[in-house]
Every structure is written in C-alpha cells, then in structure tokens.
Image: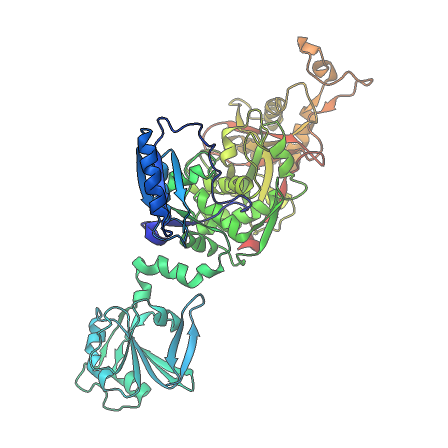
Amino acid sequence: MAMTRTGSTGSLVILDPTDETTADSRTALERPASLDGLRVGLLDISKARGDVFLGRLAELLAERGVTVRRYAKPTFTKPMPADLRRQITTECDVVIEALAD
Amino acid sequence: MRGVSVSTELRAEVDLPTDGFVAVVKQDCPTCRLVEPVLAALPQVTVFSQDDPAFPEGVADRRDDTDLDASLALDIETVPTLVRFAGGVEQGRVVGWSREQWAELTGVAEIGADLPEYRPGCGSRTQDPDVAEEILVRTRGGSLRSRRLEIAALEDEVEALYDRGFSDGLPVVPPTPARVLRMLDGTSRRPDEVVAVVPPNLVEATVEKVAVNAVLAGCRPEYLPVVLAAVEAACTDEFNAHGLLATTWGAGPAVVVNGPVRAEIGMNWAGNALGQGNRANSTIGRALQLVIRNVGGGRPQEVDRAAMGHPGKVGFCFAEDEEGSPFEPLAQSRGVAPGRSAVTVFAAEGPRGIVDQISRRPESLARSLALGLRGVCHPKLVRGFDATLVVCPEHARVFAEAGWDRARLEAALDEALLLDRAEITRGAGGIDEGVPAGDSDRPLAKFRPGGLMIVHAGGGAGMFSAVIGGWAGGPGGSAPVTREVDPWR
C-alpha cells in the first residue's frame, strides 16, 4: 500500500520510537564570527512591522556586500510549517528572524 | 428531532434520530440508486450519503457523510443499509434491497412494488482500501500515546529517520500511526501496558513503544508477540542486557524460538538458519536491538562499549528445528510445557562453523564438536564464557542413530571439555595467556554448569555444526532466559 502523508501540508507523521526524553528540536549551531561567504536568510514571522525592520536590515547588509533571501511565516501565532523550515535549512547558512510590534 | 449521540471512539459524535429510519447509501451503488424513490417515499427517514451529498433526491433529511463518521458509528459494511430506531435503540436493519425485508422493517406492505424482489448492495465506502488507513487512524489513533513527529514533505522520510538516530545503520520503516496500529493488531495486550524496563536508561517500554520499534525493524504484526516475549526475556536481571551492552566484549542478544509460533509466522530453522533471507528471523532480532537502542538508549560507542561487535548485533534470531531433532526441544528442556511457544535469549557472538565429515560414532563426533567449543573466549581459558552449540541435522543424525538424547550429548561434551592444566596454564605452549598456575593437577571444566546450550537447526546437507560464543555466564554476567510467547498474543 502506498504511504499516505497524513500531516498538514503533505508532511508525514510518525511516532517517536524513543523514550522521548530528548527534545524533538535540534540544538542551535554556533554563532558565526562573520557573514563573509554565508547565505543569509531574513525571516519575517508576520508580526506587525517586522518587515520594516528586516527591510532596513537588508539595506544595511547590502551596503556590506551581503545579499539575502527573504522568508515569511504565514502567521506568528503558529509554529513554522515544516516545509518552510526545511527550505530555509537547505537555502541558508544563517537566519535573522524579526520579532516586532 | 431529539438526537442520540454515537461516538466513533475518537472524534465526532454523530447525531442520529431517536425514532424512525436511518439509511446509509452511496450514489455510486446501483442498488442505492434503485431504492432512491423508495427512500424518498419513506416518512421519518434520515439518509446519509457516503459520496454525493446531493443524493438521493427527494429526501428531506439528507446528510453529507463523505467523512464517513455516521457510517463508522453505525458500523456499516454494505450500502444501502436501512436501520430502524425506537427510543434511541436500534430495532433492526436490512442490508441491500429485499422487498420482503424492507416491508417487514418499515411496515409498508407495498414498498417498492415496482422494483425487483431482490438486489444485493455494494461495499460501504468504509471498506474501501483507499480510505482504510485513514479510517484506522481516525477511529483508533487516539489510543496511541507516543509523541508525534512531523517529517516535512520536502524531506526524504528514510533519510529523516537516519538523521534522527532511530536506525541501526540499515533503512527503517517509517512508523506511521497506521502502521503502528496494524502492528498492535498482533497482540491483545493494551498499547499502554508496560512490557519491561529497558536498560541502560531503565526506561519503561510499553507495548506501543515495542510496536513502534517492530515497525521500524520491518516486522509483520504476527511477529509482535515474539518480539514482546524477547523484550521481556532480555530485560530480566538474569539476562543482564545492560552488562552485555556495556561490556567491551562484542557479544549481543540472540533469540531462539521454539513451539508452534515458528511455523505460524514462517520462521526458518532449515538451510541458512542462522543467516539472512527470512523476514521473521531477520526482523524479530532487529526489533529487540532497536528497542534497546531507541527505548533503552543503548547505542554503539556510547553505553555499548564493544571493542569489536559482530554483524549479528543488527539482529540475531532463528528457530529450532524441533521436528527433525533427536533432542527434546530447547524450550521444553528449560521448563516450558510441550505445545507452547517460547523464546530463549542468550548472549551471542557471531557463529563459527565446525566441520566433521568423518565421524559416524557419537563419541567421536562429541569430542570433535568439543574441540570446536574449546576456542570460545580463548582455547586456554575456562569458565569465563558461556556458549551455544547449534547441531546440524547431519550431525544430529549420528546422535539419533546411537540413541543419544540432549543430556547424553551434554555429558559427553562436558567430559571432553575437561581441560588438562598442563595445556592451559599461563605460559604453556609459549603463550602467556591462560589460567593461573594452581596447586592442583585436577583438570578444569571449560564451561560452568549450565553454561553450554544445545540447539538443533540448519540445512539437511552439510556436516557443519556451529559454535556461538557467549559472554561471562551466570550471576556475574548473562544467563540464557526463556519466556513464553503465548501470554503476549
């Protein structure tokens, strides 16, 4: 029988085979010393005026020769969709996330 | 209309009329289309449609059951089904179209007078294979307690399972709720029942957690009772899975299966009995090891300190050939009643063959096999490690023809394995390793009493038995443990 992906947005839900003492999320990477040569993502969590903050940040980074990719969560009230998280991890080395109001 | 609420176990409560008729139909079914005017003419009928919400025409109380909640609540297997309720209690039901039965249930004598006498119905949508998985999860998924993990659509699920550390190095089957529910059909035990406390982290493993790992391992549901018995046996103080894991010695748990369950689940005890190629053999042993890895937290280069290990630590399980054996089955020799199924877990290195194509006398063959056993641990060391001897059918035939039973062979092996101190003392043979020099000349027994286990398995051709070295035996190490399978069915 074909596997059915039953989670939201076509993700696959599986059951944790472990004792569940470890966090489901991964640990953060070390903060890089510089942005030279890194792929930078700007993540707007869709909170008010976060885009303004990130827009200014993109300008400042551009002055230093850093180009960015922009991403946005559909809503700040819910966790990021797994596919967007996956997309960012494959396309970026570092992410700057804006929390604003 | 006052309603009766019927729970579909997990979620929606379906409102059904207290009194009157309920019909479940689908537009796709010719018999349902045939009875369309009959339903339209019935007073006090509620019709649930499994596919087209606009079907059937002419019915005042027509309800959309494309999500199949009402069909599940009413346990519908065939459409059309007509059910009569009175006072909230089902009074009777008719499946398919039968004028006589519909007339009787409805009390309308002339019902469907222009229709044929009888037409069988069609399968309910709840029986469709394409919705079976979703319905399984919807109706019974609430019984599962394991944390749900989400793998993104852009992730490869097999890679994701590697990334999360759930694998022993080979691909694992994603344990979706549907697969775990189907696995749990292999046992009558409740998912939340505790099977054992699993070392090294001393974590309670529920039936559900074992089932999740059995899915990972590739087991079929009918293997689950064997896996559960193996987990129970391995997590005993006598077997000491923690010590076996934590030792730098490379042995791991092996499982030998006895009794009717062997044939019921298609295990192999014949050619290549200890090898690959049989799903039950390969996956049951693997499921036990994945439980120790994932639930107990026992991972190589962490608490598993083995210097070498061996390929069978992915999973090592086989069945005994009882039918062709001159010996009493292993499980019976360990106290299990005849006709009952059991597992025996024991500490195991990889097997090593012993060739003897010449011996036709049992005395000669026993000495020959003893010589092979002498190499366990080290040829000059005694009473350190246990061992298992897997006697092949062609060797067993020699013992059978001489009328030797298990006890006779054990006695002959014990005698042949009384080692001369002069050969095994430290320094003897120019080898520093060996037993310390003692003040006695008494020969030393290679194995502790009960430290040698005999099993019969293998292909019909080839005078090649196998030695499976173990680990430190007895209370300070690991002793074989037998547990019955049937309590886990």
